[in-house]
Image 1 (cartoon, chains in turn red, blue):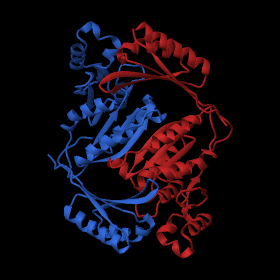
Image 2 (cartoon, chains in turn purple, yellow; image 1 turned 180 degrees about the vertical axis):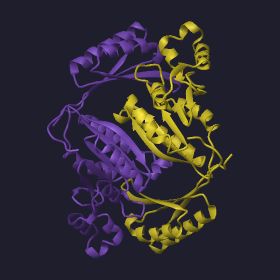
Image 3 (cartoon, chains in turn red, orange; image 1 turned 120 degrees about the vertical axis):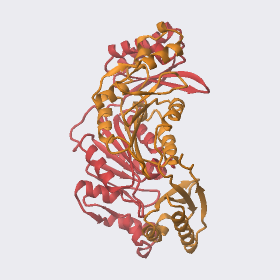
Image 4 (cartoon, one colour; image 1 turned 60 degrees about the horizontal axis):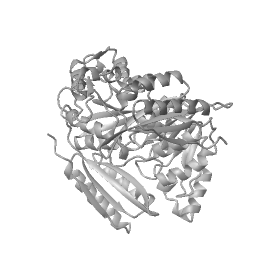
Length: 261
Length: 261
């Protein structure tokens, strides 16, 4: 999908390539970090898919998602070892060849000291799909890459986050959503009826209801998100009044996202 | 998919229903917990998909996954509020009606004290797809449900984990994988060539390579997984020898999973 013109909202999907997440060995934290970055930029994360280190699974995920969202991000599988197959899988999904990227190769030569140090496994990290542009990796040299609307990043959080600094400059920003979180100790089923009525009166405000147990105590967070500040505050006032009417005490936390660039 | 006969390995997929995960507000921990439980039971988690609270997205995920894995689990979206739409979405995906489950209704009557307390929002939590069996919820009353090979659970980790106790009794167990994790401080690209040769000699052992940065220090974990203990140990010995040959020091952590029931 080509991003042309400006829109109020852009959409994204994330493909996490990782047997280690699927086996339970590793707690993925990239999803929540990327989701937070995108939310701040007015980009809605539409789906996350965790797939194994298998070419067919990565190809299917790219085919399923590439044309339904503005941006697809991937994390993981771009290192030098045999289980790193993301670059070849993206090339296959897009029907292009994998080729040595001269600039990526020179980056590796500089990183490792001289050309002799760029052994075949290291050279593999400079192989990218034909037509891709590099994503800078200030941490460990080996670059990520962008091809069409697909951004391929490392899985190690520290490296992924550094790459995202480069990625961010290439993304269009939507109108950022504003958010209020209202906490109370009422049960979810006590507020459900009146909350639905408020949701129906404010269709442009997304109202989510999230019960939680902290230290054995039931609590409830109601999260209101909207692009329109006036609507958000009017709906928030109604939710706060509802909680008081039902005998609860409301605590409001406002989150003001960064303005669009 | 009907599970008939016994197999060495069973497969699963997890659908996380949650705007709160996609917005970055909530760090999902259910994936890693469920993945760990399944690994212990010899069930391979094949894909995780995080989707928004939208009927169409849940229906598509069920259709995509239900026939390619033995078990599909879902978390989230089964409470009393307007944004809880998992039950209706599963019913739609499977082409059945949503109906009041008498036993679920009686459970709610007991939980809330009497029938008058089971207000319409609470009653909603007893609506399940026709033909579903209930999954016990010892924490907050409102049950999950199983229909065909789909297991629908709460999103709150404490409740989901309690429900999983019931779910576990309904799952067939595969031959559990054994796992050795070998840590060293060599760079990934130093071991890549020899590691691939070991992987090629031991095709029945899955070897994953995971670099990490802890306190600014580069480290590497090599994770070997296999159903055959002898193969696992032979491959482990080769990896340890390789690390020594390359000038590193290997630390081996063995994980012995529970035996199949």
